[in-house]
Image (cartoon, rainbow, N blue to C red; front, side, top):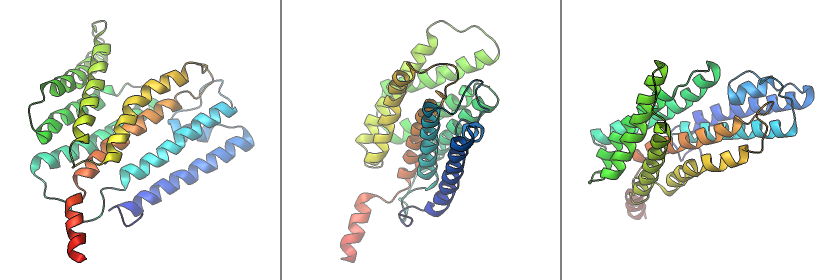
Length: 268
């Protein structure tokens, strides 16, 4: 496993350290009933007032921690080992944009938690760049896909800027932009599925990130709004989209399957 990916050892080290800290925080919560360390480690915020170490809260926080651990491993391990394929400038720029979007998603989650500031403007602006670069790398005429991405992420960028300046926002505009983002992601995953530069697992993670928010809303509905670690469900959605973004970048730098097959045949 460690030899399959270019940065597997550092990724395993970081993920292992986080998992160890998570285990310590869980044990501390079970023994003392103090959710502070576990809450900080998984949600990056102080404990919500009235929250106690109930089985439900512990389960939600551990779920968030497990997803963070898996996300760290998936993101930091890098592409598959082996000589990377030749890349033009467009592909290289898209890879960088995917990685920046991954970092922006994590940073937005942390900023929103620590400072209580909506960091949507950062995430949506970066994703808008991803949309434009993605279209160039895919090639072909895809007006619906381009339109959905520009409307969705470009719209959210404008909305976030207007919101920061306390300006008025048209009613229903956020819903339209949200649906446009979902449409773009669905079309992007369809395009990746037909393109051998991206692996099946990457597409599956993308589908999971598309479906997860809907399922998580249904799961969160019966949970109490106060004294509950319901925010942990948001971590699941964030980590899934981060994994899809990072793997999309990793796959572009991975040795091509055909090239690996040819090398194996030559060695045989």
